[in-house]
Image (cartoon, rainbow, N blue to C red; front, side, top):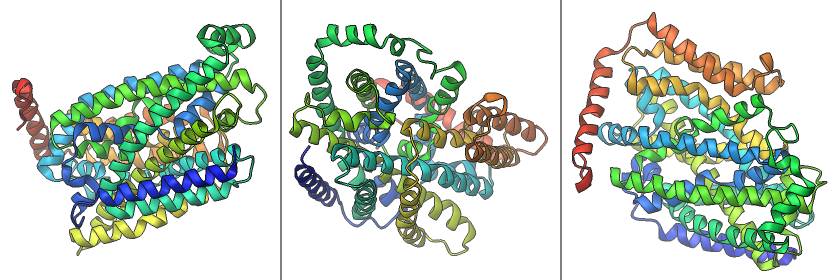
Amino acid sequence: MSTTVIWISISVYIIFALIVAFLSRSGKQSTMTGYFLGNRALSGVLSGLSYSATTYSAFMMVGLAGLTYQGGVGALGFEIIYFAGVSLVAFFGPRYWLVGKKYGYVTPSEMLGDRYQNKGVAFAISLFSCIFLIPYSSVQLTGIGYLLQGVTNNAIPFTTGVIIATVMAIVLVYIAGIRSVVWTDSLQAILMIVSSTIVVLLLIYGLGGFSGFFGTLEREHAEFLTVPGNGYFSIWTFLGLTLPWLFFSISNPQVSQRLYMPKSLRSLRVMLISFLVFGFFYTLISVLWGFSAVIMYPELETADLATPSLLSSDLIPPLLGVIVMVSIMAAAISTIDSILLTLSSLFSKDVYGNISKNATDKKMLTVGKFVIPVIAILAFMFAQLQLDLIAVLSVASSAGLLVTIPTIIGAFFWKRGTAAGALTSIILTSLIVIFIELTGYKPLGLASGIWAISIATILYIGVSLFTKAPAEKAEEFMGFIRENMKKHNVYTEKQKVS
């Protein structure tokens, strides 16, 4: 690809994204709810497209394609597990939405702190979310750095790509908060799915059509069509990778926070359906993309170079390759945007808001905006490590967030759950996960995600049984959900909610 054309394309994308972001502004976003949740007034389709662009970032066309290149069809099974986990949104989503609307929650950790009647719970969840999500943000930056470096044959250095993405993410967030992010996300999602579909079909056609494509795979790379295939996807590796993905939709606050944003439960359902349709097709595209790289470039130095190599191939028209490159870049930036907003809201609401005696809504919003560039700079610094295999790094970051799952499930379904149980399971298990990830030591050969969910569950239940639960709040919280879920079921056909 011509470096000049790439620079022009990036410039066009930046200008277009800025215009859309400015047009999305609707009045002054002067409250926490307005800036971080769009005043809880987002439509279903808009929410679904934004959810898709946020979730399917550099992880997919760079990360999942790279994982397919590394281990074969097991990567498809790994991503299908995520779809199974999205069913949790259908189950937990209405509950999040109902209590968010009633109690005015801005962050998932605020909800848990109130449910357990302990500000320390909200503080601990916010702190460890920052610790685990900053590396996840850096993964998106790394994906963009590798992408631009690869398609230009180092004419655009890795660091330059990361700087562009970091600055762009900060600017988009500042323009109008979540509204600018949602609108740019939606347009990016459409660009992603259309351009990547065309490109994959062109690749397959250039490699002999579907019969020739899979015939070549079966003949020359048969190990990539079975599990464990070349040995990468052993049962424990597969389980370690998939557990964080199974619970991703409720363990990752940048995702679960979006359950507060739709304007109605009907919009929430539309959001989920839109996301599932988008995700199914984008998953197939990304896996086929990875298989294409196996056929065309079987000796790549690192699996994460699969996408840059394909985009530079002769089978893809340069203009179309540039469009796909820009769509991947835009998707990664959308994920960074969402994480920046979520982490800044967690810090301002659940850290600053809990330690300051004069934490008004206006002051918390100011603090939230102040820490946005700080979080972005930390992610930028982490990205400079240029760690390999983006998909695995994404999962490692999400593995740490599994420690909140028992606390989340207990908040909705177990009255005996206590703040002591939540704090013990979150703090101690997070420290164990950090130790495993930093040292590379895997007790019994098991990944950190397996230990995270197991130890956190044991500690949460065990400590809760010996400590006092906030019975009154638990009954109020769970009773409200039961009552309104029943009302919703009664009025489903009329699309009414209480």
